[in-house]
Length: 365
Image: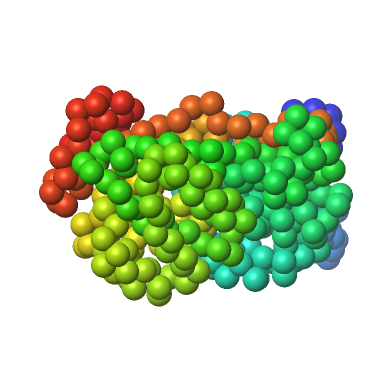
């Protein structure tokens, strides 16, 4: 322990000694200087008051230490702490940031109501946090508008340059940097996988959220890729969780032979419902993340999530240690995963071709 740290905890140590002295009658004698009964009582009273004062000072010191902890503000478009948050918190713990001891967190959730994000961003800025985190483009945009000084780290932003978050990937500028998910670049690859998986596929339904800039960009790139692959797309625009049932029913009736689910906070929050409906209408579906496969989805293709969470934690660590966001280039994924769930394929009567199955990084039997 350093001298400064020892001096900080000294009041607590003394308070503990004094309290112990009061409990041990033998020690009480050390604080008395007279055999007179009245003097003993008087000395005991002053000793007690001294111990109480030190205890209060100790408590104030602990409170001051907690107030000095680095404070991280977290703005999420969904509800409650999810796997991504827990993974990043775990990675930060490995780097020495223990919640309540060496770091404090402030979470704000929009419950998939994107119009709430600006207000919640303002709340976090008012708390004078040391750093802000935003998974997704809508949250990152809300934070950027709310502050020009507090460092911001974003995650899962499809194209931060097109969204207006950074000047360039190499030189983000300002007070913001992070990790791009490049989802729009993968939209075509997912359609290609669907075409190779489903025989004679000509029509694909695409589920997306027009409120989300990243989702809109993915939809546009999906259209370009579809033309090159000779596929016709059926747009399913959903901005509310109670519209998924009717949307997938329409997809089934439109004779779509498969479904592609684009990345949106709403879809992530409703992954179990989406998977259930895709299975109900027997739609071979490809998703952006393995979370959907864990919920029973058929296939997913996207960036390796562990790599993403690790890199975000490194960004946070560097910034809290003094590096400016403008000096940290935006990073992109280097590892991608293709996951196939054969149990789900069997449920909808689909046989995965060997040439597709052999490319899978993980197969669930």
